[in-house]
Length: 554
Image (tube, rainbow, N blue to C red):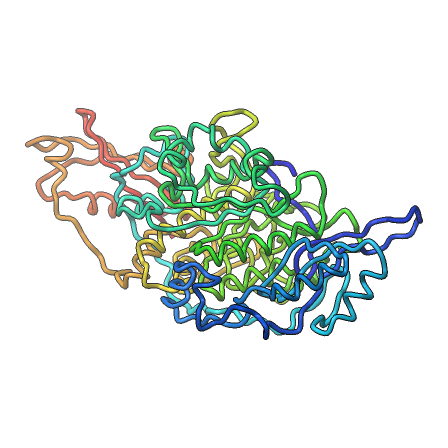
């Protein structure tokens, strides 16, 4: 997998592993990996009345706080059933509690016959795409409200360095300045591995503060989480970097589960099922937010590859499980994909899932990045959901061993996921769907979403105000600029307007007075020739003192 590209892989729906292999020396392709579906969990040692046996207290609290019931789906598969499957000679590769079954590898027809004859086995089918047993209805409908923006003063607790633009674009510093930096929150990152993450300088604080709770490799031995696949490290840096003046992530004080589900060397349906394993793990461990910068469209075996018609949220096992995670109270952020302009063009799986945030990419100025995958879904839902900087985003590049820039929705998604985490930290009594709804309502295209930018670029300051019920309440300062910029006397002022790329857009002259305020000066600017977007107003006096404030023109 190219570290700057989302993987293409085709989806299926039965849960966990994959593949068609040629065996016994014949030029004939036979299935060797099957999903074995169990009939029930009736003999399980676990019970929904005692969820502490199979869910962490955080996972239980997440459900309780959002009024979500713990159901039979949450109970692990029956271990007695698994043992009887193993006695047939089948190798159990992965399990799923949500789908109640296992993926096995078989070596002969006799094993398959033995599996099918087991009284608790509903079926044993080769891994392939199937329809979901029921239609998923989105958890939240969006009501039409004003998309008017507010401004936020720049007096930052973080020196963002090279990552300033990607944070400012989302008005993320507004949350950071309130102390919402990820503290007390947990994020699961599902990726291809976290090579060199323990030696990356911008991640020193992550390890010093013991912010990695656990890691797991769903492919091989757990030690390979840190010895293979650097894409995950680059993704992690977008959230967790903490080097003042160089790079700050979007939620630098969150805690993390680092989960490896991806195979770099091949494109196999197995990866999609391992993705399910990873998100089930993150759920049971207690993660609040998931980031996955992985996508699936076509596989090495073309007979397993997806079509655009499959992008309905109900065909891919990964997409279905992403919605299942949302129904258990988590917020799932997924990279939309990098297929814009390609033959595929559309979003990848599991970005088609409902009740999640599929994140597309824009450039430093907030314009659509032409590689970003487009929507909508096959069943007509808006995708991508929201956008963040993914073209020339600041990352820690493991191949270069330094902070540089990289492009891909792979990086837009974690930038967004970190800000989502901070927003939820500041509004802990809100449900996951209330948080997602506020994010969409704050975005630049909320009233007119499209298939390129979805609802647009969120303003996390506005989203915070929506959740707190203070949106639309104006706070006008009456403080004169004299003491701030000019001392005790009036003085000339230069007012410059810059875009998010640092380009001067507008410049004018004015004068400080006893009655002049920052709001009056900003409100007096003639912005008729300025297009909508995010800007920084810089007011400077002759003695070199400056005052800056963010301005968002709708």
